[in-house]
Structures are given as C-alpha cells and as structure tokens.
Image (cartoon, helix red, strand yellow):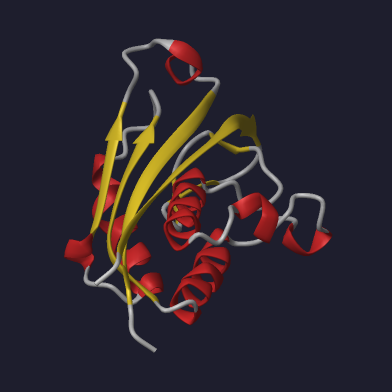
Length: 161
C-alpha cells in the first residue's frame, strides 16, 4: 500500500462585478474574485493538493492562465478533469481537508453544500471531504479584505493496475 499526501494553496483578490464562487457554488456577496477562470480559490487549492499528491505538477502547468481555453472556465470542470487524471495514474482519493481564509463573507451556512459539491465531483462520500473557514483576525491581506486564500491537503492511496 502506497499513501501520498498533497497540499495546495491558492489566493485571489476581490473584484467588483463578478460572482463569488467558492467550493463550486455561488456565494451571495457584493464582490467576486479576480482570476483567469472563475477564480474559485477553494477548488484551485484542492486541485493542487490532488496533483501534488499524485506527483502530477500543479494547476498552472495543467491549465495555464495564458491559454484562452480556460478564460472564465468553471473550476468544477477543472476539478473533474484532475480527478480523472489522478485516477488514470492509479491513485484513489481517500480524503480532502481544506480551509478558506477570509474576513467576509460568513461561510458557515454554505460549507455543507460546498463539501457535497466537491464530494460529488470526486465521487467520494461527503464525510471524506472536510471544509472549514477561518479569519485572520483582521491581519494580513485577508484581514484587510483584499482577497481570499484557501489551503487544502489530500490523502491518496496507490491502486494496483
């Protein structure tokens, strides 16, 4: 049995006039996040954790922001693609643990739906996907409401051919 851990981190700044996508769902808010895709920091951190655990690089190499094909793309599609890539390299995802870091908005009401959405994309049980949120007590760029960060870890197990 071969176990591997991957970790991911993503950051995007706030921008007016764009929906806020986190964990694959639209969160009601007065701003969204700036990015080449839909800027879903949570899914991007999970993608990097999965790619890292499987030894398959990172989101920027797989989906470069210089490629117009990914402009405005729904990050759920990117996560589904990465899940297939991980599986095709004989890895199975055992669990995901992720944290969104922001002062606002309050995310507690949305975390169960985020976890369910991610579990559905990855074909996992919702109990295998844990989503948390925290503030930075008004410290740093997230505390000054300049943007949102997310970090994630993923545990993978190697599967026999």
